[in-house]
Image (tube, rainbow over all chains, first blue to last red; front, side):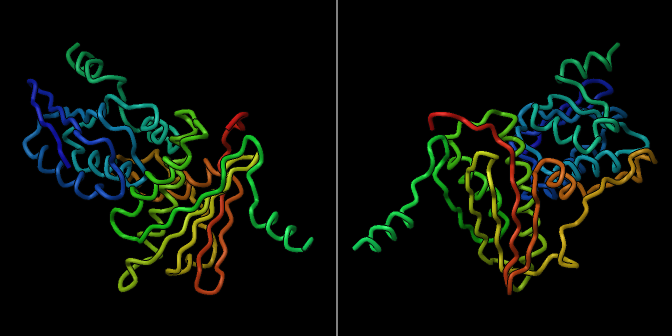
Length: 112
Length: 165
């Protein structure tokens, strides 16, 4: 699971470099994010711009990530494609996460 | 002579106008099985020209159903069993049948798939249990049967009926 990790001031940006977060890579994803956020600041943005498909295992892995970061750090989601957003909406997980249309929007919301 | 021609007409069922010819996909269970099957299925449905919404619904439902087979039906030492998927396009949608020869569904029925409450602490949020909820929410006529050593899951996904396939 390839992740690009950037830190901009007080914000850590994790960009997933693969098109699918599904059962085949869910464990790998959790582990990669865990390692990538070891020294992360308070705000972590998961950039899903390149992800076109997630299944329930992928969703579970993202929820697990949020729980792992809590309570000291917050996970924000950005760049959800319609198919990915649908999984969050159907499971009502969109009410639990702060979700931004694009990475830019997430960043500007944090910098205000 | 008449009997022979009757029989051949029966077996050579030509699909009705506007309907995709039936097709089957067979894969062997394993870590890559679901991706392989989904790719083949979506390619096979190409002529239907499904829109993005229909494709994502179909992909999600089938991914969840197939993940269940890989994770729960085929456990060691039977982890590489056969999975047969048949797809039949009818006027009321796409009828999918998934068969495997692994462990039966617990209690012999399809799980209810209810969502856990999301109003508690972050730390109490559920990390699983979404699969059957998604299948039941997005698919119609979900029916499970254990037939001898076989699990058979049938479901229907509403896709628009298109003229001129």
